[in-house]
Length: 141
Image (cartoon, rainbow, N blue to C red):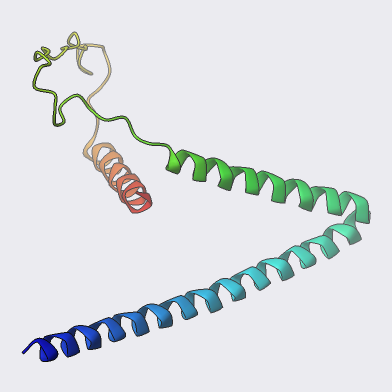
């Protein structure tokens, strides 16, 4: 019985390792192709800029753009690595007395401020924009 369980377990591990190796190989090939296409794109941009301006200006423009892009990627990586603050409502917060929520003062409504009420198209447009932004930000996390 134990031999059968170990054989099933081993077969499952081999299948998982084989699938992970295949995925890693496909990702490596895809990354290599994307990197080579980026290099060729930079060469083409250099040639186009060198024809329009001189070679030194073309090299400076491409180098500055790559530096800026690299700094943006490093900044995003550092911001993702930073730990998020832990809220007070976690485990071990039993000794903390409850705090009453702060209620902001009531804001004047659109009709009382002299503005006309928003149309249905405006409200639907804002809701659609918020939904798209939520999907984009949800994918990033």
